[in-house]
Length: 146
Image (cartoon, rainbow, N blue to C red; front, side, top):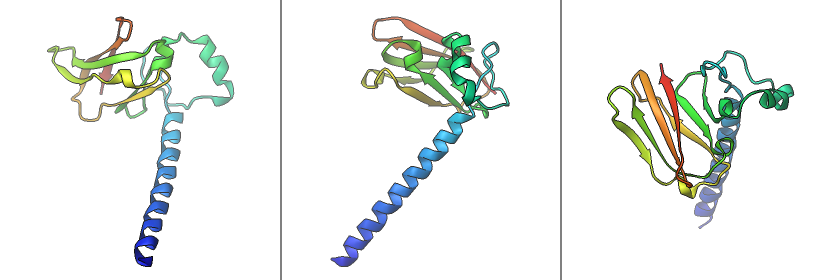
């Protein structure tokens, strides 16, 4: 019984340490996210956290709502900046209008959610993200996967 208790405590501690490491790497990864507000492409420099409030005030809200990481393989969608609770989302190819992904359970998420969309397995091309709000509005954003 002591062996099982020790094993359980060891596994619990290991999980806690891994969770902390993962949270730290997520925080580090999100610190590098900053797209050019005009072109929407990732810039090489990091966010200037000292002037973050001023930078945010000078940009339109839409510039911060859809962000790609530097590698271009992750898309972050800030529901709070978009200003509405979301109901569902689709991702479709603009070339042949085939829906590649649909998430019909966004209504379960709080309004202050930052949704992470993995673009890693998508072929190079242009795609359309459509977000359907709970009020029936449709928010569309064209993204480029390189």
